[in-house]
Amino acid sequence: MELHFLGRGAAFNPLEKSTSAYVKEGDRLLLLDCGESVFAELIRRGLLQSAKEVWIAVSHLHSDHSGSLGSVTLYCAEILKFKAKLLLPTGDERYANELRQLLNLFGVSDSLVDYVPETALTGFSAFSNFRFCRTKHAPQMVCYSFAFDTPEGGVYYTADSAVADGIAAFIASHPDYERIYAETIDAPSHPVHLPLHVLAELIPEGQRGKVSMMHLNGANAEASARALGFDVVTVG
Ligand SMILES: [Zn+2]
Ligand SMILES: [Zn+2]
Image (cartoon, rainbow, N blue to C red; front, top):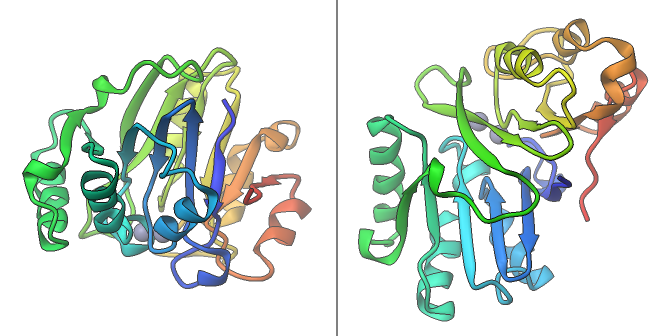
């Protein structure tokens, strides 16, 4: 499963645009995160205008991951005349309530979108199963990574995460994994993001080609990741 990226920047690196990825199969679109620059990038590429079904998985509500939610869902409802499907992690009422509240504040009433369980995301040929995986990021926020079962062994997308536990668990359950998309920060330590060297301690050198960096925090982030043998996502 190849994810296509609309941006690869961290919150304070807007020139690289908000980190967000998508899968498009025919007129079906799956969006992983929906940050500030995403609506413009979707329109610029014609991805939204040509969609008849839009699924959105939001890792957490920092605005570099959620800032386009209002415009994207309203565009679906008012221009395209269908409801976007907002995926919800199983058994997490707080996440569901906060996502609903944010959309309500954006002027998107509950009747304009469909809130659907993560298990409802089916019908894509690129993956057979999708699930939210709880992780730690900013302490006051609920935050998730995403895991996919794919014909090639599985894909993991960390979104924003301060810890590598989820990656380690994914590798344990998917030893022949296809690819990991990881956010790291090019810094010796950090309270809410994963320092690059911590990921390097977890991933053996021979495996780093299938671990792609995203959410780049500055001009040196790509070179630092590549120097350690990691891949870096490109924005198409
Ligand atoms: Zn972020
Ligand atoms: Zn964040």
